[in-house]
Length: 54
Ligand SMILES: [Zn+2]
Image (cartoon, rainbow, N blue to C red):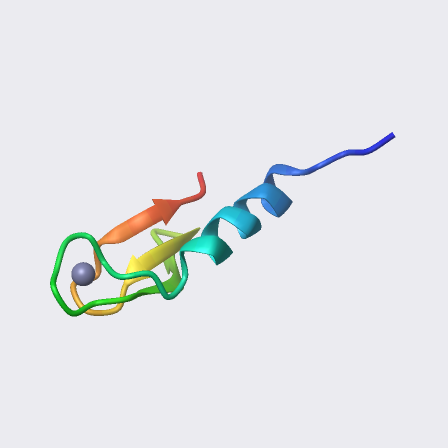
C-alpha cells in the first residue's frame, strides 16, 4: 500500500516552481516562502505568490 500525503505532493509542486521567472513582473524569480502561514512560492521581486498550499 502506498500513501501520498498532500504535504509530499505540495513539496513537489512548489519545488518545481522555484527558480522560474515571475509571470507578474519582468525581473523577479520565484522562491519558497511562507505566505500567511502556508507554504508557498513567492516572487522575490514583487512578492506575488505563484503557488500556495492550503
Ligand atoms: Zn514578480
